[in-house]
Image (cartoon, rainbow, N blue to C red; front, side):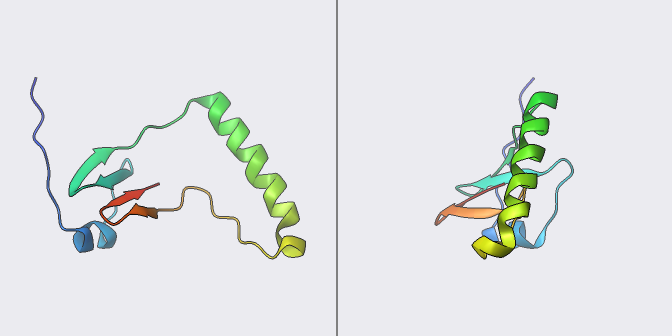
Length: 76
């Protein structure tokens, strides 16, 4: 089964939300790889550890944050 490629301007992607979440790579919307239970458990432990350090380290803890990694690539 063929899937259609969806092209979208970056401005529209940044104003949009997707369920499930999606990433933006070179004008295309791509399905985001999602971890299983073990991945989630480790992510929770790491976020919890960083949250405990946040005030002293002067950092903000933001899991699952959309980040621009290249001029035309945004990953979660």
